Length: 411
Image (tube, rainbow, N blue to C red; front, side):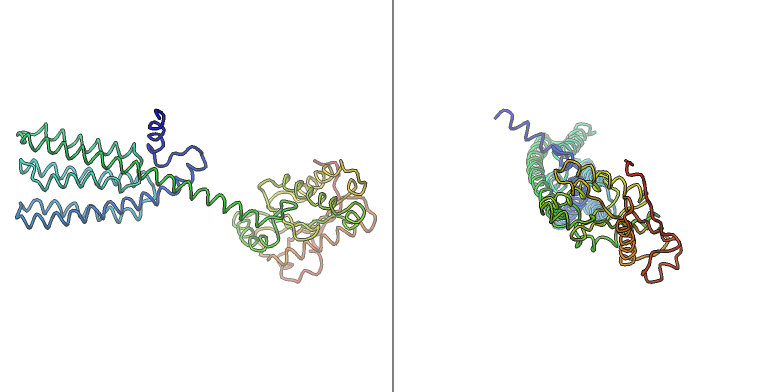
């Protein structure tokens, strides 16, 4: 029980500090919109209160200075409403809220000094000033600082006056400020707790949604992206590469004689081989590209700027290393045929053209196996002439098609 209050105080002291860094970052992203809504709500509520006070000032025929003060504060509050729409920093929005409260408090202090008496309407204004504090989305620490600032300003102004306010007025003012402060800070603490619970719930939902989305976009056997997601995402990925002036590489690969592995070693071994493709090329790419299972034993690898020959060889070597421990000779000797279509960023080529060109390169790579040539079977077709992109891709880009045979010992 003794530890409950310090733990509670720690949890509500800041509205954006959480136990985990991920949750803190998530909360800070939402803090701007919350601070903006809080400033608008506090400003609008202040306007309503001031308009009601103005009508009471007229009803009781008080000094016109009361009305002028209300008009100035209403204009300031309206300015805060418009400023909240343009400011995009949570701390700046909080400072605007502090400014509104301090300026309003200063105006009430000046009115009291001008009248040399605390009118009952001023007591009500002071109480309303403290009550609107919970409308902002700050934590208990910030609300306590604002409350102490306003309380100190009122207290010092009464002690430093050139005349003496009535003792009854001073004690009434102290009671109103302390009571309103206690109510406001209690509401702030409660709001922070509720807001944090809401943010934590939203964060859990976002994380769960992202996980579900990721699972729906991935092939469960290999961990690669699936064809459906790739078809939706590819144009956006291509646009980002071109915007960054990146050379675009579209690689297609599949397992040589995969049917023989399935028939001779069993489908479980075939699945393991496919899983090794996902492991090998995901490790090579890291965050520099996309690995997609197009269907069956065919995979696509899309990346930018990396040397396609190096990516192909490193992926192939890792794939072979993963297969090396198999008890089946066909799995240990499994090889990949790889075709690559490579396009500079300044040439417009669509998804179908890239896919067709990579497929032609893959077909050419497989012919190396059929010609009983030593692996690796890798063909890289580079588009250098923009006019070639306008012609239907029935053949490789002849001016730059290359058959590349690298040292299989490359890392």
